[in-house]
Each structure stands twice: as structure tokens, then as C-alpha cells.
Length: 450
Image (tube, rainbow, N blue to C red; front, top):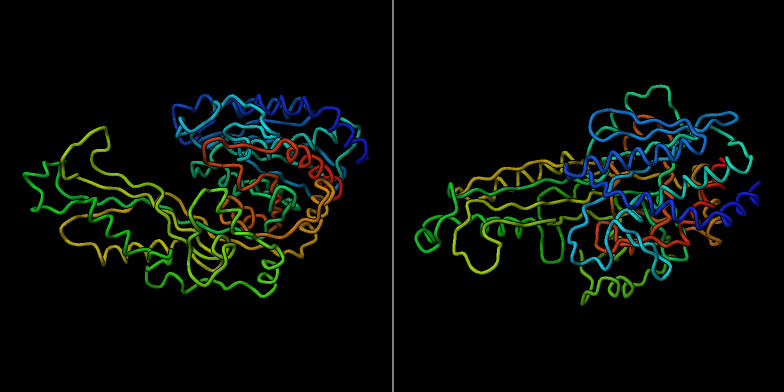
């Protein structure tokens, strides 16, 4: 059976790539309401594509962007859910793209487009795996359900609400490919995700922008105050200075430390990829520990006052910072948010006012690497990529994964086909064509052997 599937993938790979290009052309930017019609068209396209494969497919309206649901019947047993998202990040800054973000091109073995790796390309590998099984006369051992959301990149809650409401679906496992391989040659099973607490802080001074010559020196400058507040939250080495924030941080286990050593991570690779003079981070920890197992405090955006061409000498009325803290096992996002709020309140001068607007939170999570489903996925990656997979953590967050665990209590198999260097959320996002095809083979192997 698997030989027929491999032959089918090889015979149809050019079509698979062209179909992926069609899907990538939709500018399904969920965070921008002006793109709502494009996002809906994108959902309809993949729904129709799954239906054309012979699956029962429909859109589910839970408010917000629609959920794409598709089901293929199997012989017996509990179903397997394949999760992904069809929405993408904004393409800004547009002037840094070498090619148009929503006109896919293949260059040097990579397909370049917004969403190529995060997450349309990785999801489409599973779509083509299911097609390969169904079109070669095979029957799935168990029911397979696709759940594709359109709000992952904007923090929407349509899919989590659907999962909480869906009492009948009790999957054996959830398959997620929204993470990465270890490197171009080494597939990986991700067993841990950092959590997140993200919010905005706005400092307010005078009731309007005022002339810096007429008022400077008599009123506090919100941009200066905000800069000082940030500087008191995180030290020059990246250590977070908010009291109590490290109290619940879980240490790395001994087997994990040994695993990190076996990975043989080379700091020079990351330094070269990002073109930075040297790497940076909390003292006393390796780069992988800082990326996967330590909390961080990051400024995602900082703005206030005049930012146009030339000079405009003012004291701005407000200044705002967008902040995200990445959290590790045992840290509670709501507790962390309150710690930050209390600390800023204690250090903020009474010459200004401030407010915090919460964006979203998600708790960190760890999975048991010895779970049988995890081992089945590991074997599938070995088959698809022809190399022994390794166990890694991920520095990012996938909030809906926690919903799956809380509501369904099943293992979540994080088997990424992309690379950290694919540039998700960045200009010139890409996905290796060979990884797309190998991912389809790995997914088919897993679906046949669950």
C-alpha cells in the first residue's frame, strides 16, 4: 500500500505544487478586516478542494472567520484530527520582499509566498497525504477529520469554542504541523511549547501633542517615561526584572539536558542566519535553553509622537508599547500578567497615567515523548524523510493545542515540516519543496499506521 502511495505522490508532485500555489495566492490576512472577503474565499477554496477528494466538507460558523471541517471515513476506532490554519500574517514590510508575497514563485528549491510555511504549505502536505491514500484505492484505518481555522494569527476563539461545544468528537490524537524540523536534514517531534502573555501598555501625558519649546520641561514626556518603564522590566542581558516572575519556572530535566547536548547545536549558524554581531541572552544558559525553556520579555512594537519625514518638535500626548512574554512550564499566564501590571504600577511616576490592554494569553505545555502515538509519528517522520527524528521544544506558542488537551485529553503530535529559517512572520517567507513532498509521505505513513 505505501509503495502505491509513494508512486502516486511522485507522479502527481507537479500538480500538488501548482495547487499549493493556488491556495497561497489568497491574501487571507485575518488581522485585517479589509481582507475578510479574501479570507472567506480562501476557506471556501480549501473546503471545495477537500470535497473534491471525496471527503465530507463544510464551513462551520462560530462567529469570526469560518472553520473548515472535512471528514474521511475509516474502518474502525476513534478518529484522528489534523489541525492547521489557513490565515496568514500581514505581508508588511512590503519593500523587503524580493517577490510579491501573494504570487508564489519557486527559487532554489523553495516556494516563496506569505503562508508558504506558516501554515498553508505544512497543512497541504497532510491534505495531499489523505488524497494519496484515498485515490490509490486504500481505506483509512480510522476516520480522519480536518479542522482548519482562520483566526490563528489574530487570536480569535472560534475554533476553541467549537472544540468545547463538540462533545461527540473524541479523537485518538491530534496531528499538528505548525512547527519546524531541527534542520534541513533532521526531522523533529516537538514535545514542548512555550506559553505567551501579550498586551499593550499606553502611557498618557498631556491631553494633546504640545510644542516641545513651549511645554518641554513642565510636563513629563510619555515616550521617555515609557522607555524607562521598559528598561526597568528587562535587564541588559535579557533577564526579566519583574519581581516573582521566575518563581514557578520548571527546570530542565536531566534527560532533556542530555538530549540538548546530543543535538550539537551550533550558535554560529543562528548568528549567520540573522546577521547579528553576536548572540544575546540570559547568562548561564545555552542558546537552546534560552529559546525553549526560559521565559522572555520582548518589545514587539514601540511608538508615540511624530514618526514622519523631517522634524516635528513636540511632546507627544501618548506612547504605546506592544509586549509579549514567552512562558515556560509551570508559569501561569494570568499570574504573569498581574505581576507585570503590579510592577509597572509600582514604578510608574505620578506625572503620567497608564493603561494596559490585554491581547491574548496561552499556557505552556509539555508532552510525554514515550506516548505510543508520539512514537508512531516519530517512525512516520523517519520513513518520510529518511533520517532519524529528534525531540525538540519550540520557543513559540500554539494556543489551540492547550484547548485540544483540556477538552479531549489526547496526545497532540507536533510534527513540523518547515524550518525556523523559513521566515514565518517575516518578508520572503518560504517552504522547501522537498520537505513538502516528504511531509506528505510521512503523513500518509502515519495515517496508515495509527
